[in-house]
Length: 292
Image (cartoon, rainbow, N blue to C red; front, top):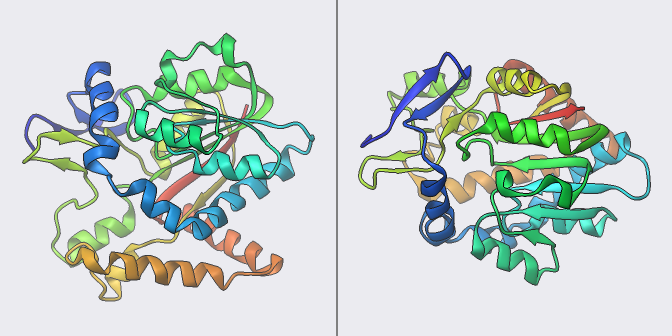
């Protein structure tokens, strides 16, 4: 895998690449590579899929609004990207702020009237941005070189009783290992390119390791949820790893499945189902809600 290897770190208690990229390497990657080369269609593709994206955002915001009922609610999104989540939160009446290192994503967010600071989170002056009722971070902790300090700083920025929402890929999961063994695949979820000698994901979490990390930094976990276990499709014979062209079809099948949980009663049933997935350690992503 080029200059990087994968280690199950006994000090960190989660899996990460070695060596850990420096701040300078990360800056170069997110300023000049991520939205330009690694995910050039990310913004356009998600805008096309915004109906489903908003559905997932609303699930999070519904839960948060039950826990934090006051009218003036302030939310910070770390690694806010083009601002899609914050745009939805703003429409629901939240006071919003994003932090995003990519100039392309930051510019797009600002055109959507989403206030965004173009910096890495560790560079932001805590006194200047104040305290928040909620901090949200989606697909971020797997990309950073110090997730522990991200969580510690987040803890300090939350008001008493505030909530952090963390969503990360659920990797080295039981279903992935079954797929790997049954279909004789390599560890297909590892995002390292030996050809490019590039990193994308620095850290790899499962439900157990992300939970330990969250609790280690002082939070009390109040809810664990998962997302649809995409490995189900492979086990049914739809190998989107071998044939990436069927990826879109697979996604639409998942959307169709979730859209059938339409009214309030069935939405609650879906939530219970995905919580049970989390208990079993399966699902494509791990979602943790934790309280200060």
